[in-house]
Length: 420
Image (cartoon, rainbow, N blue to C red; front, side, top):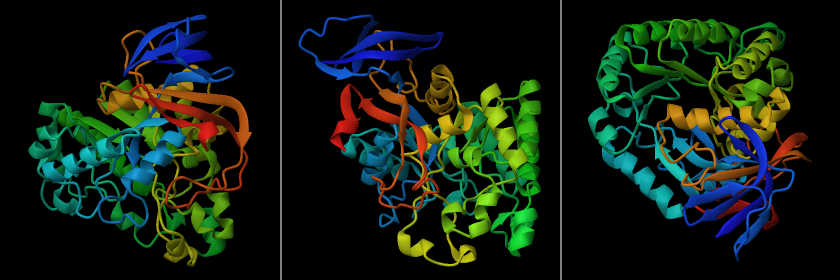
């Protein structure tokens, strides 16, 4: 048994200082001054205690690029960031476009055992955008989120077919919204900074035009549609209008799009090269407001590891993407000053609901799964080294507010700060 003692426990209706008693994989009791009765005691004084974080958008690189990251190192990074579930993107080699490939990822996650690994499935075969993937096999293998992440599905007719099939099952179509023609040759946000640097830019419209089309298809088909890594004020407006209309549309934002704007790219540091790119200050303000007011449902890291030698090149030649699992909650708190209930809503409860993860995102109560995160909002820290196999983070050397102190997965401590 484990007794998490004296934390501010987050529930669906607010917070209360209480203990959480865990026996096996379940929470047995929540209340003040519970009897330890021989349990291992974890002091949670000063910490927010809530359901383990859930990441709807992580690149684990296995299979095919294990030299950047693998499921074991991504899991270690994830639990250090408070995560008990990672949804693995399908842009692996081979792409996760069939049932046996999805089952492999789930099995590897169980072998490592630190957190739950849930495969997302490709929408199209090989993510090539030419014909549908084995959606029936993927569904049977437990896939509930379908995406060609890293590439937009350019053919509207093909995406409509996918939506019409998945709406019957209750699946989610998640889109990396980027019009390839408009974005062609771009390396950063198209704006004053790209003009100053003489670097080809990606216009905000490249994202917004795809989101607008896809919302129209969601209206037509009734399929659940999820916008990945929202980065522009225009996209926030589109999602808000879709929700006001009652359409089944949800959205995510990354910690780096909440925290930074395109001014960071002035130094041409590849640690600030991500797609979608860092946008203007008005876009950052819009995504922050969107997360606070619920237009944007959740935070997802878009954790994208790249090896050091890949990033030691000129900015235009550097790969897209940054790591984010270990710094996510801290960056979100710094950028938005969310309260405890709101932080766990956007980091845990909402993404679990979108991804249909029954054992994740449940607030601590008797009988709930013992998947928990202990987060100290007062502890400032500066990330310098990572459990991830790669270190391409824009937060390296930057003081961040709030830190994960412990993670419990299925009733076992998978991370505790004193173990670092």
